[in-house]
Length: 272
Image 1: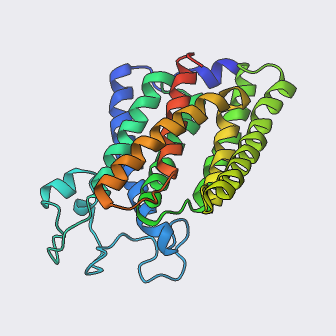
Image 2 (image 1 turned 120 degrees about the vertical axis):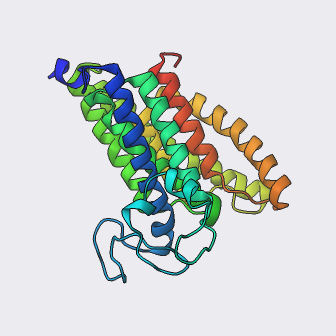
């Protein structure tokens, strides 16, 4: 089982890179669909009761999109950022999601490789990107996406134990399940204290739940690095946000997501 989980999925590195590019862009297309559907309560798992179910359609004219309209990055570029049917501009968030997801997958591949053990990491990337884009636009971190991040963290923990990387099961559960509890409680306490000091909400409950999801991935020892990274990235994003929008209130979720991703890469590189 140990050799199986740590064995490469593909034998040839060139083939791995081709698969990485194709899957990264497909994941990016999925992330862009999540970014549009989840905040609007549209179905993305089952067909539900929407007009087109899971079929993709132009948000302006509602025309069903054909395969030629759904090629990540290339379709947007070839149509010059417009719908082929109504000529309305296609939001730049779509190609941004696709490109960011691809880059996120490249980072995971560079550090963790392409093995069965790294699959939960790759599967998590489109959900992270969707969360980041949704928070930028709507200032929310939807529960269903945060729950998926948490569940994939449990999968990664299970595979870590099965691979032999964490031979002491009790210690692993304490570090990672305990990490989820510690991260969540710490975020809640921090938000409570800041709210009392600033007389306004400092951390939304979505941020608190995302903290808990991060904890099950990175474990208790990484809480210091995660909080420091979140602070620096949060300040940088706040300055950029205020300069571009003039608004003092900014979404903190993207800072948490970027910090989480950074800590994952540092852990994989054995810097943490």
